[in-house]
Structures are given as structure tokens and as C-alpha cells.
Image 1 (cartoon, helix red, strand yellow):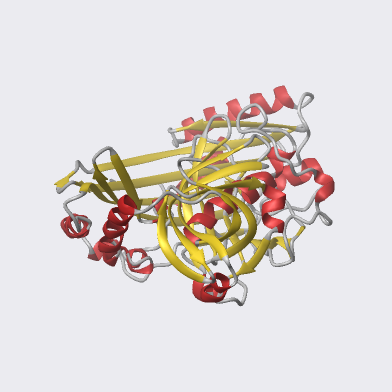
Image 2 (image 1 turned 90 degrees about the vertical axis):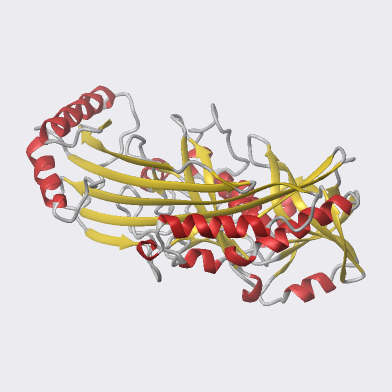
Length: 485
């Protein structure tokens, strides 16, 4: 299917936009999005129906007399854009004396971005993709007790064009890949499931994303671990040290650092839906969020990470920034609008999930920087504890303070050495205390670049991908429990 934003059509869209601009405005922007997706799956040896989709449309924003208005349309003809711009101006005029005045962005710069590729999907046709999924799904069945299996592969290609009446033009192309494996083993009334990172092994690029995460070789291990969990004891209960693998760390980062630092949440925008934050504006610059080992960056420039980009959806250039350095809270996840409202410095994180949603403050790539300690040394420093692998469940209060996480698999650490596998491991804590108990940060060999593909926020709801990277980390004196606790 032909996309709206072809190289030859960008100039046409710009001309239509300029012809349709209403009189008497301060500035206006047009954000056009084309999205194509394909989702394939093989379940218990059966190829599932292919699900594919195409979506295209535009959102206009108008600044006028201190007010701001938005309108969305799937009609990007000149008449369609004229109608949308008129509607946005009507809302801008209506809010001019009732809303917090936000200056127009003065978007005059231009630029582009494209997801990096090593191997194009054009070399890997639909039949090849289905054959691959059939092969890896079959490898999950390592034992007669494997009762349910699934291998899936999702792809999304997104093109974005942002135009401004002030002369700016930004074009960005994103190619997302989402591989997944699931194996469930059962015996009697008991069942245990092991997955390929619970969907966290996702990123930008081409076919090489599968190789980046070892997708084609992971199935036998996942099947074997599902069976091993059937035979494993429950996780012990007590206050112990834990070592946390990257595929669990990413949810810990997401829930107890990312969401609490979103500036619109701190300002109260999300309290009726997703809650508030224990973080307050006066904490920035002095609050000891974690131990001195905690260094967290907002970095949309990491090649191939799920939420990498050159500009956010308001056109702000993306740069790497420390949010937390040596444990001290420095900067919120606040876009240009939230920065203007609060008078605080932020980052380029104004993001929307589609053409019919306005950009809001979102996480992008939020990463814990690696340290210098090998994983073996992190484990060796634990007399009694648990190594936590792969997020399975999460619960956190409205202020993103008290939390509880469950994992797919644990390994007991006894006298500095890994011992038996345990099932249903979980741990709980309070965000600031937990991060202050960070006692070891793994080196670059343990560092994994991953993501969460389905973060929900906003009214109307927006589901978007966020990138997270982390080394293996160790925490002291954490409350750990099993399913019978």
C-alpha cells in the first residue's frame, strides 16, 4: 500500500499546509504519521492468521493569542487540513484566557532520522519468516511436559513528517522489531511459564535485531527452564540480598524511576488516571535518589534502542542527559511544554503514540549506566540471596513509591555461588530505600539494551514503546518472598 509520506509527497503536504493556514495565528504545526505493521505467530505447531495493518493521518496544533488548540484528521487534502486548522484555531481562541499560556515553539530548524539497518526485511520474505517461527517454536518442546508454546514476530514501520509555519521540517523513519517466545510446562495442577524476556528483547533495525538478542538459539533453553521450574521449590522468604538480571531491571527502572520523574505527572496532570509521584520539584539538584553507584541517563541517541530518535514529536533535538548522577536527582522527564510551565530544565521527551494523539511527557531510552564489576563478583559478594530473572508481574502505588515485583525464575545464591533454581520469586520495597541499597553495578559485559513495548499513559490512553538498558545490579537487604508467602 502506498504511504502518504513518500519522498515526493513531503513538498506537496507542505504546500497544502501553508495554503490552509488560518489568518491571525502565532504559529502552527502539522504532524503526519504513516504506520504499517505485521504480526506473525506460530502456536502449538499451527501458523496463526497474519495480522497486518496500515494507518495514516495528521494532527495540527495552533498557537494563537496565548491559547493552544489541536485537531486530528485522516484527510490530508488541502480542504481536510484547512478544516482541521480552523478547528484547532477555534480551540486556541477558546482557551486563550482559560489555560496556562505556552509560547509557540518557533520551530525553524530541519532534520531527519532513520532507524539503523544491517539487513533489510526485503531479503527475508513472508515465507521465510513463517518458516523461522515454525522452526524455533518446535525447539521449545524439549519435554513431554511442555503443553503450550508460541513463537511470534512483530514489525512496525513508522514515518513521521513534522512541518511548522515558522519554516521547520523534520522527517523521521522508525523500524521496530518485536520477537517473542513462550513455553509453558505442566504437571498435574501445576504449570510454569518461561518466556524470551517477556517481550523486552525488542529494538529498532532489520533482521539483525533477531541476531542481536539470540532469538534463533534461545528456544531450547527457554523450554528447559520451564520444565526445571516445575521441579523447583518455591522461592524462600526473608530479607536478603538480591542480584537482578537486565530483563527484570528494565521494569524496575521503568516503574520506580521513569514514571516518578515524568514532569507532567509531578505537576499533577496524571493524578486522575495513572497517579502522581513521590518526587516533588524541590528535590531536583539535591535529593539522594539512590546510592552513589546509581547513574541514570535519558538517551534517545543509542543506535537501535527501541525509543531512539533525533527529535521528539514537538521537534526538540534529542540529546543525552543525566537524570540521576552519583545517586543525586538532577533532571525530570519534562518536555518543552512542561519546562515552560514549571521553569525547570527537562529533556526532549514529548511523544505521541499515533497521529490522533497529542504528544505528552514520556520516557524514551532510560538507561542505567554500567559500572566495572563482573557479574561473578556481584554474586560472590552475596552470602545468602536470590538472582532474579525476567519480569512476570508488577504492582506499584499511585505515587510510584511502594512496589512489588514478581519474576519468572530465581536462583538461590549461597556463600557467593549460584545454587538451585527457585520458582515464583518476588520482592518488594520502597523506591528511595531500594535504590539507596544498590551495592553493585555490573560491567559492560552484563549490560543489555532492551525495551518495554507497551507503556500506557494519558487520557485518551496512549500505548507506546520505551527503551531501557541496564547491567546486572545487586541490592542489599531486600524483602523477598515466594508464592506461598
